[in-house]
Amino acid sequence: MVVLTTSDAAEDIERSYQLHANAYVTKAVDFDRFVDDVRSIDDFFVTVVRLPGH
Image 1 (cartoon, rainbow, N blue to C red):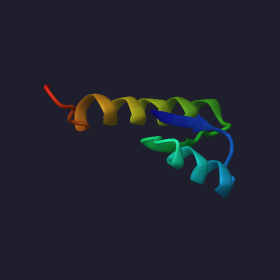
Image 2 (image 1 turned 135 degrees about the vertical axis):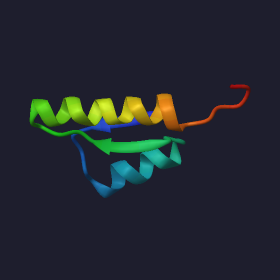
Image 3 (image 1 turned 90 degrees about the vertical axis):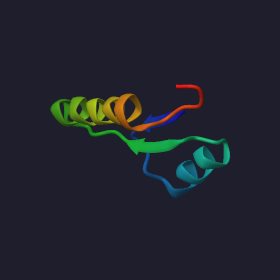
Image 4 (image 1 turned 180 degrees about the horizontal axis):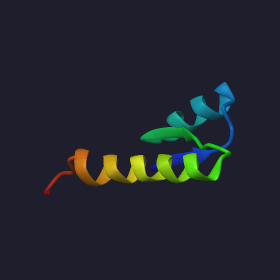
C-alpha cells in the first residue's frame, strides 16, 4: 500500500507505517510534478518491486 497525501505531519507518517504502509509519499501541489511523482511510483512498483511467485 502506498499512502499518497498532502500531509507531511510526522504523526501521519508514523501511523501509516504502523498500519503497514509500504511507502508514504507527500504529493506535489503542482500538477505536472504530481504526474511525475505518480509515474515514478508506478515505474517503481512495475519494474523494480519483486513479488512472490512472479
